[in-house]
Image (cartoon, rainbow, N blue to C red; front, side, top):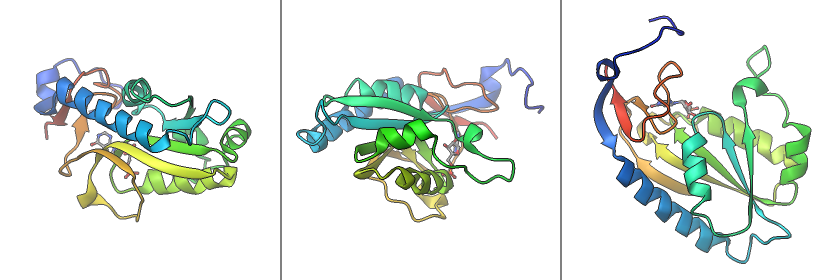
Amino acid sequence: MATNEIIQDIDAVVGETLLTEKEIQQRVAELGQQITQDFAGIATSEKPLIVLGVLKGVLFFLADLMREIDVPNEIHFIDISAAKSSNGHYQDLPNYLEQAINNRHVLFVEDIVDAGLTLSYVSRILYQGNPESVSVCTLLSKEANRIMDVDIRYTGFEIEPVYVIGYGLDFKEQFRNLRYIGVLKK
Ligand code: IMP
């Protein structure tokens, strides 16, 4: 299938529902409460929690999670594809971000951690900005596929190593707008 081919038949692509909208929202609320508890008194209006997401998959999760976090916070995004140089290596953190995270507590939010490559690369570049701490929160984790040693503080759901779509996650850039998470048909 060509990358830009328009996929019209959703039933041909999306198989079983792995997580319903209700299950996702419930878990997101729990994660938000946990994060609120953990950062109460630590994140302040002088020093808000930096909530940082990687585009584009984290879009809906981050929007929902932020609204469940009840400590002062700021939102920032990294576009990993834009941050990659032509030789495939990640470039330095953008200057504004380096300044934003300096001496601050960072909550790094991921849609899904699979092999852990993205997370370990981003963690490495984040430390260039001298944050006070970095805590990782992922909606989904496929631990069975992990090849990098990553430290995840908050996990929404541990899932089997299947390809999933919806709630921000795409197949050929489509299906991000599904309210649930489904398994891609083979
Ligand atoms: P990792 O670097 O191997 O951990 O992969 C993480 C990235 O791969 C995620 O941020 C997604 O962009 C993508 N990815 C991995 N598994 C899936 C999936 O099941 N559905 C959609 N995207 C995925």
